[in-house]
Length: 357
Image (tube, rainbow, N blue to C red; front, side, top):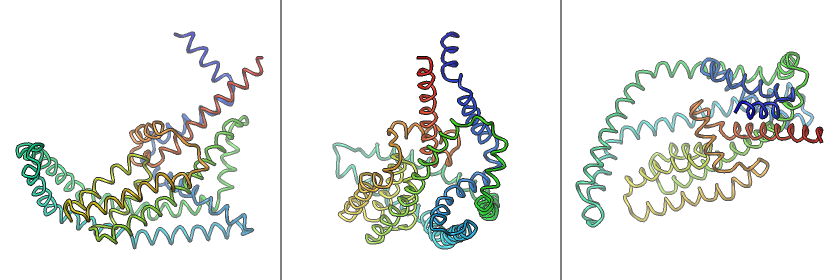
């Protein structure tokens, strides 16, 4: 067993560049794992600045000086952030508050609908089965109520955290973009000389993540807006809140769309019952999902590598288990990094085999 491991280690890590690349990755993962919660505002600002750098680059190609381009992009970022904070979030929050207030009435209507099933389908559903399900759900709702109470007790801490993010993150984003060259130059002086392989991996990941980020922003906007218009046309309750959830669900491939369909269907079912309006809404909603998956996604992400669905789901589960919500959001970019590293190691082994031959 030791001989097998020794041969594998020599085959993959005999190249100094491979050792440097592996050390970089281990150090970054360890740092985020140990200090991620402490430096989260710094990491969030770094990710936002990295994404905004694409817009700065576009303006630079139009012969706009970098300081001016940074100010323009940062102004756009602050304006959009302020619009979301003042316009969308309060409305969605109000609808969420109304949803919590309407939950008892919605639960009562849903209970009446379930209790009517044994009369409509006596051969498939019994009253005892419905009562058992309702009893189980009742205990779950009680647990949800306890969690909401504990959440309200922690609200002050949450408000403080939000205030920190609102102040620190924009400042950090501005300085990251403004002093990009100084920061990269300072880090470059402290890097090892032999970083060709690491640079190769970064260039590949940078290209893939850039295309992925641009595509996701456009996809969230299009899917969210189309869903909102659909819900407004049908007069669905909590239309903005549900549309925001549907738009954000595209960040979690496959799993997100499946999860967010449940509240959409439940709200529509309680509001209208199992009638034609409910059926037409769900058909329209599923058409939007189908157009997103079969037309919009291939169009937006034609530049990125196509990861296998199994690899995407595995990345969501793995990184989500390690870093929670942030791990889920960045599952695909992190999976792209893993693929780039594997490809780089394959090239190292191929180059070594050619030298030996």
